[in-house]
Image 1 (cartoon, rainbow, N blue to C red):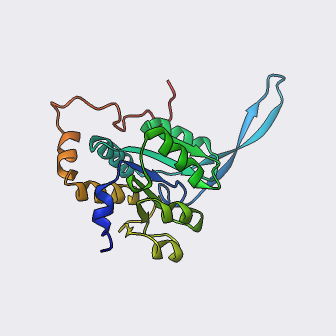
Image 2 (cartoon, rainbow, N blue to C red; image 1 turned 60 degrees about the horizontal axis):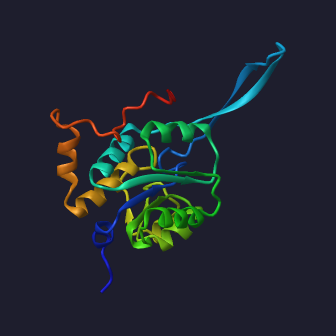
Length: 205
């Protein structure tokens, strides 16, 4: 008998996300920033900016309270991603990955997990190889039709609008842990876990 989405979600130990279109709405802002060189001359550097949803950050805290690890795998290389990853203290950060299964195989070896224990959340065709092989494939609401067709679960919200949180809560609900993790995250008597989204907006100190 075929496994249900809930059956697949119950096995998950690692949740991996694409970035653009999944943790963001897919918009990439690139703007010029003047920089003064030591000799006094001025050059212009192009800086990339992205917008992230705080609900997703809080969701990653819930995932960790539920005993899971979280990461991102993206084709682009962006300091904006690196800063957000540090802010959220993500366990896995892979940038510049055109073939995402390579990163996933590294994670499997490092963590001693199987494909059945990995969830992957994507939105475009570059994510299909990972979604086809990982145990629980999630497409966000704004994903391409080809991606939704191969997903085990499609989030109600779009990328950048809480889709990451949707995926995490679905998994925790399947495990019977969602309410317990929510209660732990808001319990004043519970020490704030190191994984809480209490970053300083990219401050690396």
